[in-house]
Image 1 (cartoon, chains in turn purple, brown):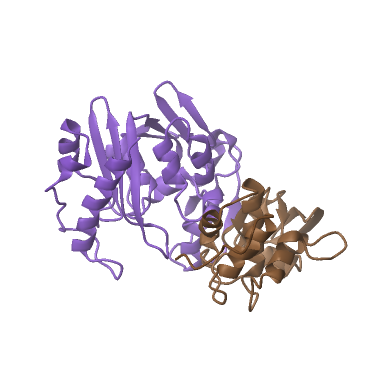
Image 2 (image 1 turned 90 degrees about the vertical axis):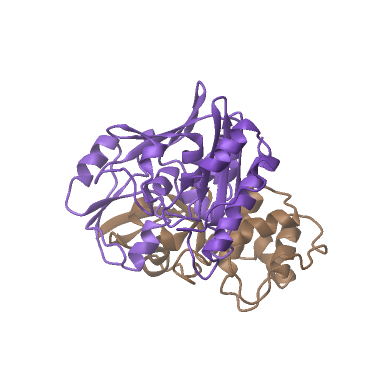
Length: 262
Length: 162
């Protein structure tokens, strides 16, 4: 990879100031950014590490919310969210492999918004709030297509607030080589309805499957989805699966998630 | 260049690192610890796994400057004080858990991390935990046997399961 200046601030304020420089980019766990820099797909002049900022780390319960610091690694979420939001902890425990989970962070995953990443589905299905250094963004407004988010240049996610559902589950059909989701469905039931978010399938990134939400909100069972099929229109087609295959998986994984919800 | 100091296998060691210097390169080229292997350099194969502050990481995808001050254990730190093979290393030898040996440093370090958090894993847990370590020789069965044996459990049950 091309060389760059490396800085490691100890506070969000200092990180924001450092990101004001020319072609500066934030670095969290680096599980996506560093490989993409090795391939020279990305060549920042300055990398601003967020891993030295203690305020960005940790999992804590706040009433009916679970608040996760943006620089919290997946392995910590898998462990520390297990009691309050088991489905979210289980999702975190299925990302990549143990070494990736020790470094990769929730904030990094959401900011990158890989169309096959796991976390975006949890944030969207939970109606989470993405908190940054300057504002709060609803998950419904945050994800704006493949690798695109509402974040401004230099804006840092500081934490993510997840409303804790009555029941939820994530069902992932893993692409065995990359361990990303070939298709993953996160289903979350709240007092005011059910939300279903699908990752890995659409060319537009994570999305809500509204027909399934309507069916599940009146009858939370896998049977309620009988006859419902997602459209293959705008689904990803690659050597791992056709758009039709992924559209089929959307139904299968959603039914599995509903059956597994707890 | 910036000075980076790590505690490696219990010893304080320093060297120079650019922004882009990876922990794997720093260990191998700056500190001369070539037991850590770089296989794919794309964070998939796991040959470069070391422990950093007690956690297994893929050192080819960690920046040396980002972990300045950390405590690192490499495969060189896994032998006993008298130089004989450590328990996991010995189990790999006893159960033929390696052929060419290229992946072995990462396999041993990942296995050590597993046994630290789960001292008596099931065979399925061993296979699951080693998902991020790729061996192109053994087909994994003998590696799994070695880890089961290193945990003090019967190694004989490891059979083709997937």
